[in-house]
Length: 468
Image 1 (cartoon, rainbow, N blue to C red):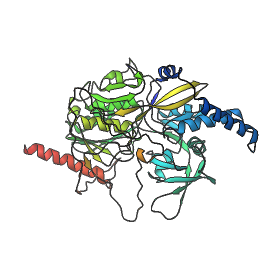
Image 2: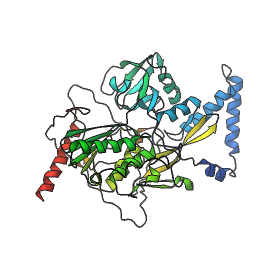
Image 3: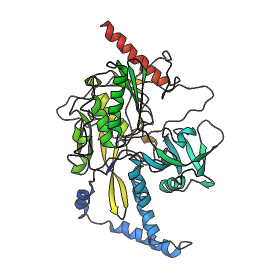
Image 4: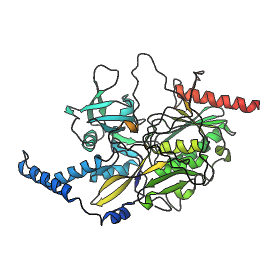
């Protein structure tokens, strides 16, 4: 893919309930299929397949349609590759496209499959799952009275979808809790507000990116303009919160990074087997605007936003597109990354339509940060490690990462450095000692330990600056 990102193709994360899947869009399969068209067919393996197919048709306990068998074979073929490749039937394909627009039906929970059970990656903010207290690492073992064991992820997701206001009961295993938890949730139409922001106190702004959607870049620009207008003078510091952000549209991630980086800075590059899977995405409008007539929302931002001291908050729920932004800002020494190790979803999925409103979601490339680090199965290591505060008597969620998923693609440890560029030396991670709790209100909690530490550090940087 060269030039502008096309409207439907690359995906930046896994399965979300209501099939809330992070997307980007190029289509790069044709050349690969043409290249492999002349390869000899594996006749022995195909013979085994046809024998198994025939036995099922003739001897299975009840008749099975050809369509079901073929669909099951396709599902198995793709799910056996890695956790993110999948077959999308008409319903799943439709929900995927709707999800990127920030509105879909379901419970609002990002999930994956682990050892036959549904594993929660992260609940999405302001959704039924979030309000019910579901946590990262929870295992869903029953949907109403039906055990999850043996279901495919797509079938489990379909069961959790439904008409708004209808209810479903989830039985959950949570580490540290001796008994299963039973939670009844009411389904709803999920409308995600991708950006939240507020002035924490005079001089210090806060922006929370919940997910990267079509309008995230534009909404970020409005948030920044509003913070500067409300503060009435340049900000002393800015906190960008990417915790539990599962990813989203690639062009939106480029737009967010471009808001803080010099024009034409490299944000991310990809590498795969086919030529069109090798992309270099820079802080240039052709990589973050979705149409030629769209206003360049970054062009009119306050110039001070390119140099304002920044801290980016991350954790184990920070995945894919949000890892791209974190890695780009870290490699360019534009922001301090604070929190815990990110999820490590560094593979690129391409949506390849099959006709009749079906498609496959296929892993086609890997993401690399500007300095050449692979995100896959490793994630972004914070410059300053700050764990979430442990509250006595409350069971904490368990962070899971890409490397914990079955069939995940490994990170071979060979970073691909850009030719002619000196590798960027990153700061050694360190533990941050507890600091003063700062009273806050609005969209943030006064008990948010990591946010308090970020604000303390920004203030400390201002003191050091003043003493120079």
